[in-house]
Image (cartoon, rainbow, N blue to C red):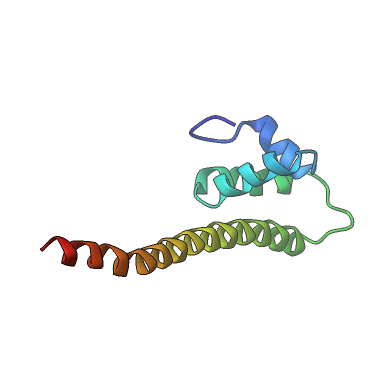
Length: 103
């Protein structure tokens, strides 16, 4: 995967489920922000025979993976924000008391 778009090899590996977990997460994260690559993945899915899966199930699985990745990123962001607010809340009284003692 390069900085701009997924390679044809990355897309094929994603579809064939041959990526390891970190690589899979990178592809999912990229697909969540890149419509061009998402369309390329959809086109690649349509080219391979899916005897046991209906097209809607395949697309549902793809969207679930993307949404799961978005959710994880959003939860991480919220967790960091909450942590920082907690630290600021705990340190504020200490910082105020030090500034009051100086004045």
